[in-house]
Length: 537
Image (cartoon, rainbow, N blue to C red; front, side):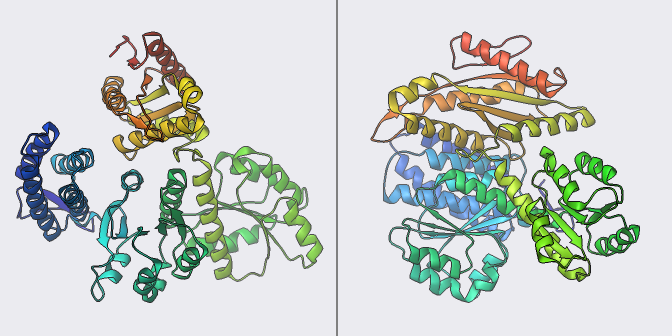
């Protein structure tokens, strides 16, 4: 029996119009037929087109919007293959498997209200890299043709979306897009948005800004830039999460006054009149904003700000001085020596709240970008280690497994020496894209250093992780990587696996995974090993 969740979170049984399990079986049989590339594959494509259209209509009528979006992607891919045969069904099969997984695992969700939707306006098929990145960052995907809108249809689509992406193809200029979106500027400004253009010019960039579009990318996509944008767009959702403010002032009455005002606005407020206690509190639980009195009896605000700035956890936390000081030189000196802004203590409540929300948003957004690897957009070395620590703590509380995997590209130095460092970058990005596509949204993926990657798999034991990574290893090794100039190379990787609670802390986990990676290299490379006992594939 199928269920959906209503907007208030309760489950209701669906009066099934469609037997989705039967649909899944039919889709799976077509997938197998296409993979075998029988002589009748063109007939099978037309069968698939008919099946996908029927399923998409059913998904729309039953409000399975995520599934309808996937089926729409499938329809576009099948039509492209029918009109321009390539006999390469990899994209079609990948979308079909995604659809099968959604149906088979019972993850059909009414309205998909828990995940934001990325609306892609285009006249061409979106790039696989774009679709993969959107899925990885937790977006449902809806693709709509720029030439097919009527009346208020576009207004509703944009209003229901958490992210807007407009793609200018080779044959589609900026002018029709301006005509289409100009009446909707105020709606567009309220959400993250991206213009992807096949060419870069000042005219296109200025038009994007005037339309209220917040980001500009050129095709082919810079995946690192794209992933940073997507991370930042999801961070904007964090404004709904409480902001943590720490205020330090020797006047206790200030804490009482502002504490009441912040509570009314849903802001979590901590007050300290003792500078040492304030420092210890900030280190133990770094706030989003520090409000700091400039003049205090034992230590002034500038001196305390310098102490905060010397701690790695507090280096970038916004510090706003609050004082009755009117001297401009004194204010400027305070900002130069560690503060981000200077506010008068008589500041209106609403103004201060707006300032805090803006600063908190920028701080969280910057932190998200700083935690990204510059080449792949994955978590960087420090961020993935922090993620491991977080998952160890969670696994300890919930009495479950957490497994990490250390991957290393085999003979990577040879790739750089023979084909150049640009080819090496292509290989690294290719592996990062595959990992992004094949792992769950809540798994951690980081570039640990050079050609090494770290995976963090919550609620997963070693054997399950080994089987998963081994499947990825086999698929990665099967597909040649195009490094430019019609040159294709085969690349493999080796991996070591370790798990909590067998290894109790971060250091022990990483050392065990590194040891198993060494054993995998020693065993001939292109294999995955976990312990105990060592298993070589």
